[in-house]
Image 1: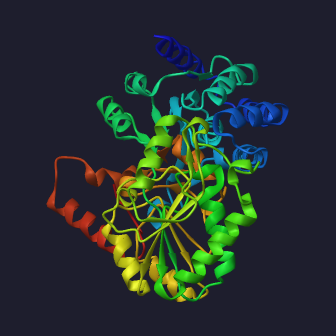
Image 2: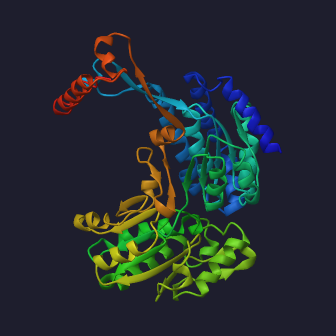
Image 3: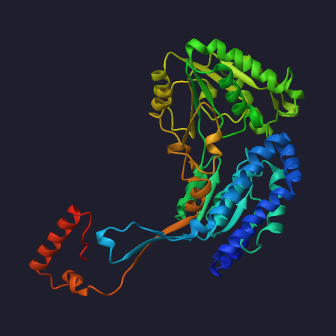
Length: 467
């Protein structure tokens, strides 16, 4: 009931035109930046409680990321809001063709527990910039962060246009059916998509999937190992963009395993449980799921320790993993990295193409031909010789394809996601002497004139759309 009331308030505010003006949007975006700056310690504290997340990771991968998006939107808003002129050709010399970006209305944004701040606030920045009213629902699994956002949003943003609701995962389908103008969801989402379909609500879904990481025999093994280990084990592996499994060229498997072991030692010391740089599982459900997959797959080469009372799973690397193992059947949201070997790049490509399309594909090689070949796979995004960074760039749209999701966001792409691009044709009433040819009663002579004009226009790049 609460969410219904909130939605009605937002709807009234939108219809009153509160969000239309550029100065209003800028003020709200500036308020987001202020909120992050003034409450950095609170965010660090909340994420520390929810995920045992180190301060460094919270600031870099949650707060700075959102701030960059907001500042980018502030700097570009004027340009984004301007009507776009369609390039003129001969057929449009007499008319003006424009694309106008208009806000969709009241949008609903649901974050996920892996990155609870950025998955709520990066889409919110796009929704604000595009002139919408928005309701955000942070994930209940990260309760301290959800509570904090719920408290801060009304004290920084316009109280009529922007709201937070604390809805449980099971309530979400009902909330979605309230008929929003767009639903933006990060997480596991078929139920959400079905609920949205019932009210014909457009959706952006960032769903995840198993992200493959190919390691070629020609690559800098120590850098490769560092970048993969950082990507898989930060936030204790709770990430939709981390490499999910390695397809390692058989010639370098021994070297890679050795290098990964050294990295874990460097990053987290002999006992990662003591490290201030290493997180914990968000709850027992995720802990149990990860532990069960780990115990029933391959053999442990590094790590493997689990402590239920602490929701702790050590950074773990598995070898001897087969395609039918549980860990290869579902997404991994934990600090476990299975390593499979392949005899060549073709085998890796075939393996990737046999699976559902992932959110990200990664390839490490010093040979640029390998990266060109790996683009024969389909994925939401691709990154060579690093991991995760492509999902953080303001300039690159980020999203999935196929079962890893639909739609994308970041920077200008967030603005477009939350806008309707309306086609406008601005005409005058001159030239009726030509236009009259289209009116009844239909004459063969008029038809042949029009046919002649249209063939002419195809040849000369559109001389005349006589209509």
